Image 1: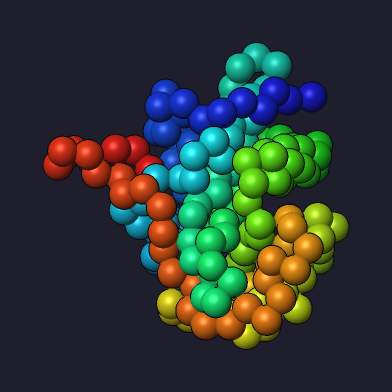
Image 2 (image 1 turned 45 degrees about the horizontal axis):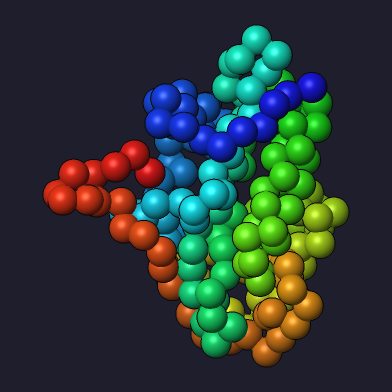
Length: 176
């Protein structure tokens, strides 16, 4: 059992170390990261999973993007769970919580790059993004979409672009 709460500034260093362990240091060179660079996560959509003892054991963030002709959407990721806590359903809890919050906040769709066998249980499919393209190399079979509002990605085509709040305020870089 974990507690999922909104990410706080104190989580940043721990989250970054967790992501390095779970995904690897090369994670910052991925195309999805280009859409996150210099941006803040979507408001209300950055989460931390805590163990009973208060240890950070998981993280998930969503980011504002423009999904080509479909318009505003979210980019999910990264999702990571501490290796010592994997296999306990923490990733599923984070996903369910984040998708429910995105829907409550009125978002229409979510995109991600990830393993279809894992993400399809949440409704993600390649079919929703077949005519959308990311601004860099990506394995096409790992580019997935989900409609939170039916029809949100109908006929979507074009380039996915970064959107949302910039991570700098008065020349000061905020933790992203």
